[in-house]
Image (tube, rainbow over all chains, first blue to last red; front, side):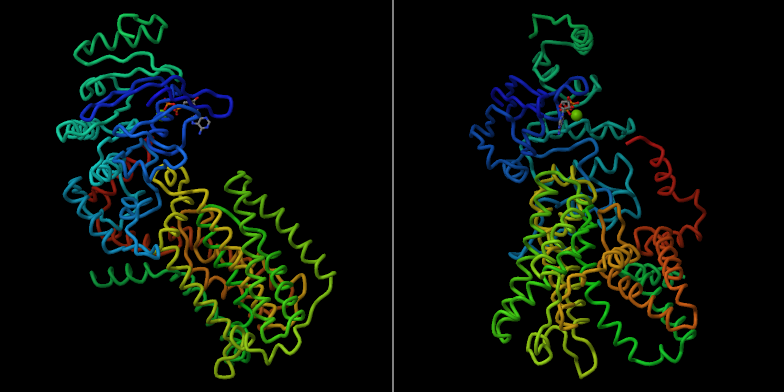
Length: 250
Length: 356
Ligand SMILES: Nc1ncnc2c1ncn2[C@@H]1O[C@H](COP(=O)(O)OP(=O)(O)O)[C@@H](O)[C@H]1O
Ligand SMILES: [Mg+2]
């Protein structure tokens, strides 16, 4: 991302954003509510274009007039949101393929194939063990952790090069959080990249190679993990919140 | 016991099953209450003639409501398209003037729907307001164009288009009933098996989820309203041909159409729609008034009885969950197994209270 800026009407959500994510890098994105984290994610994933600035995916410049969620998917960018990844009243198999259905040339869905693949993802990729939950179950029947499992399994199946997790652990039990963390480790081992957004600093510290602090729409700091301990990061963020920016790191 | 359970489950999955049972119950009640009328096929044939226009409009409305929107403008489209048909009919030689009229009618419907869609999806006007205004406007245009008068379709009985769309099969059964059923089948496939329909369900469920998952929310909404406009125009074509006369008020069935959708089990909340529920719902609504009149109950009671039946069906839908009986079959399971020993049940209860 180069010089990305985003306005919502007169509200400036992002300014002067310059960020690069390496091919096999896990970037931890930290910042207060309303700092602009989700806005950044949505520009990256083609939900909406920025007001100005440039985006390069795998070295190629993106034309925002033609960049959308589908083309982000085609470029290998997948997203897991805290709560807005799944259609509540819809069956699971539809949730795996919404926005990229397997269709014939008239646009009709190959239900059998979609269900078979969805089942495959649930059994093998996610390791679903809940009895009575099948691809025909409704999302509303699932627990929070199970829902996040579906969203993550979907991202894994589509073999993303960059998986963005936007507060994926909100409202999850400790055990379920551990699963998500484990998944991010797997991204790293698989040679892929990730942007991990969370308010839990220990979680972010554990999985990330580098931390980006977003403050009121601007990047406040970018710190490699090797340069800072968890305790120092915590202290740094506390200072940051009090406006005592540490020049050494910024 | 197992086979009973799976039978309950299977039947419960059939779309529109509860409301089909209501329709059956209604006819049985009417056969008992007014045997002279309801043991004769004539009354059913008359339903097959009078219900299709309402049903057709209600079918389009089912998709619109599934998307979490509403269309109050279809009565004006029924009127406008009827005028367009009658204009083509009297301006050109009826042999092909009818086709020109149908083409114009569908185009007018698509145009009105498209404008509704743009207002809702691109400009952001809530559909209840946009389509309410559109209903006044286009109804006004229809009256203006027609000079407030009705137009008779001369020689309509002998016209091929008349035979094709509103003629009688075997000299008895109104063909429009089959067209309405065919449209229902087509819309069922579009909603449940086409990616356009899947987009409609996800948008009605949660437009933000649909958007971040790559559904083109705005384009889907515009297309949906344009489709609804054409469906309403088709309803207008059927009404006008069937009675052989265009008159500006011919689309006056907004409330029956809405009632058909809701008693059919489609929820106002959006996200899921029951196309065949609407089919049975329209026949329940369409049969009620005539049915109550045919019994010896005083005419003053007709609307009261209609209201009671509608309320009862909607309560039934709410009780059985999203308009089908799938929930009943799972309740059936819980009756047999002690609730506490069912881990899923516990999970569900825990999640109800968890913030998410
Ligand atoms: N669709 C939108 N329309 C208007 N303002 C928005 C929209 N999305 C986000 N914002 C505003 O942009 C700012 C950043 O929001 P967001 O990116 O969601 O923050 P974060 O994810 O870091 O909590 C906030 O002030 C928010 O109110
Ligand atoms: Mg956010």
